[in-house]
Image 1: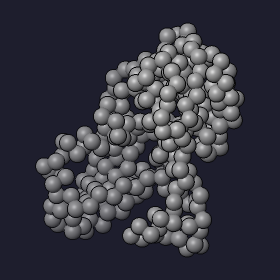
Image 2 (image 1 turned 90 degrees about the vertical axis):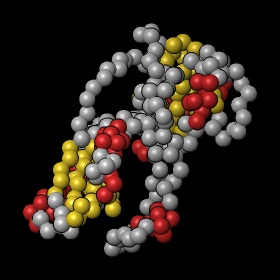
Image 3 (image 1 turned 45 degrees about the horizontal axis):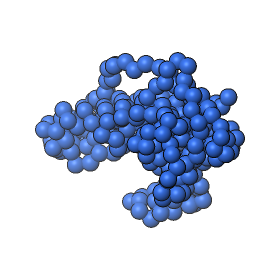
Image 4 (image 1 turned 90 degrees about the horizontal axis):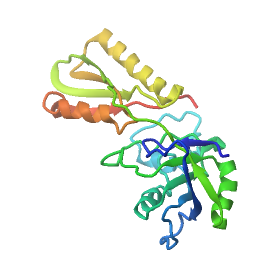
Length: 261
C-alpha cells in the first residue's frame, strides 16, 4: 500500500480499481518505445530550483534588509518536470498514471495540481492519476522498472456542479482610471499563506484607502474565487467587466503568499 493524493480533476476508476502491470517512464528520455497499452505508467515528477538571483535582477524593487534573498533555495513547485508524460500515456492507451514527487518539500505526496492555468479544459484528464511521495516512491519506482509487477490503482469520487463567488469592492477616485488590487480567497487545504495572508493584506489596503478616500484613480478590490479551478473567478471578472473596468485599468497588483520567512 502506498500513501497517495489524487491528481485534481483526473478520471476516476471503478470501486474495485484498475489492476494492471506497472511500467516506468523516464522523464529524461526524449522517445519512449515501450508498450504502455493497458498499463499503469509510473514516472518521476521533478521541480526546478527557483532562481531567486535572476528574479532579483528582473524585479523593479525588493525589500531585503539582511541580504538573505539571494541565498534562498526553493523548488519551483508550479513547474512539474515530467507532467507531459501523463498526456503521452493517455494518447498511448495507458490505464492509469502515478507521479512520484521526488522534489516535493518534506517528501509529502500531497500536491493539489495541476489545476488548469494552461489547459483549454481542465476536466480533460482521461487517466486516473495519483501522486506518491518521495520515500515510498523509491519502492514503487523499483517495482515499475523491473517490468514484472502489477498494481491496483483506486481513485473513486464524483463531480458535481457548484457556484463560486468573487468579492468585489470599489473605492471611487477623482478619475475613471482604475487600479485593481487582487488575491484569490479559495484554497484546496488549510494554509495561512494559501491564501489567508494575501487576503488579509488586500483587506488592510482596502480599509486604509476607504478611510482616507483621497485617491486620484478608482480602486477596485477583487478577492477572486475558483483560483484552483482554472482561475474561473478571475477569467469571469475580466469577461464581465471588459467595458467598465478592464478598459480603464492602468495597473493590476496581485498579492499572494505573504510571510515573514
